[in-house]
Image (cartoon, rainbow, N blue to C red; front, side, top):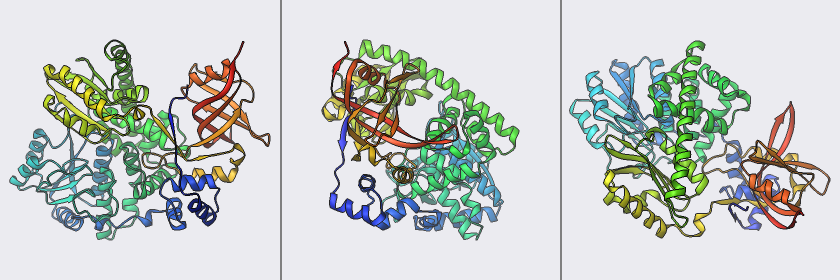
Length: 573
């Protein structure tokens, strides 16, 4: 029943005590802060109170002066400018952000986004053909371009200057007019984990400052940056944390008409908007456009402002997302059957292929397989006589390095340590699957095959107070690099009988020594319900998070169960 490894962080207790006293928080809260690199009063103040005024100057980024000068000249001389964006959330939001801002400055600007299925990622031949055909003289890439040497050299041959706004790791820098990327060698920008839309945002901030425009001219796009940052799973530390927090605040208080239309479909009150709603509501609908049809539909929704137009585009995205969910659910059923018949219990990986599987949703399926089976996963479909698909990894295994070892069987691959895409020939499928499993077997330790929960502190239920909850709330927004604080309590006993909700979720109550009752909810933990109802007076330890929620206009505290371990107990007769 215990599903995870519990990894207890153990910071220096004396240093934690000093922090606890300096900022007047409990020791469990101070431990959680210490585990996030917050160790002094000054660091805590920045973590909890950073604002838009604390953002680094965009001119600290190499080539920013050069890029701003070139863009202002293009605007002034009425040159034709084109934005070239990627088809995911990061690329589409960054493209919309730049397009809206530049049009407000009087620029003559258009955009281009690849077709995922016919052109793939990056600056395609068809895309550059379109740039040349439209007599563009300044091209700005968004969330792509950093490794497109040949395409950018072709642009130079046609007299087209290229400004790159990207955040991917560079290989050999292309001959662009200006490169805006905090990951270039020797970067002097103080934060390297911006997403592509975040880089575009720094670009418009710099343009606005140079033009002496009002801060609102660029700050009003913080909502787009928050959506992209949350969706692209970049680290939610430092500048990204500030961007997302400020963007969420703007969406809650001054939402655009297009966002209001989407919130209505999602049945979400803007005032209650959180990271969950972006990650599992807004982002999938934006991505559905590129996965199922064309990312242009997502950009058109992002650009829309009339109520009718916003509703129409939001409904289009919602419909495509519903169809996407049907397709990936169907693939999941088929994939589980393949696992039962083709994947041995001792396997170190999952590699599945069906020629009919929809290429646009394979990354989603691979991610769901990781959640369920927690093994490096490759999900593949057929396209134009080749096999293409997505790869997802588990913590501790660099999937890009693993694929490098399988390079003899791959036509093409690319990605980073947690996710990648691959292309191979049908005749190489079997040897690739064998080699990939061998590599994973060597690289993946036995301990790394069980997902872990990082526990910040042991906690007595009596320590959960109003002040404790209020401070915890300020740890948000949560995501990669800023996980939700987790706590562990021991020697717990049930208060009343557990309930099973929708045949999937367990709900039960606990009481502390002061007689206070806490409601506990565990999502998708039928196993825990079964264990608690078949044991006589079970005693258990539990890892969980704590949150405040509103129910019927009343404030409630809720414990969100992550994992549970029985300490003793006998089977009911």
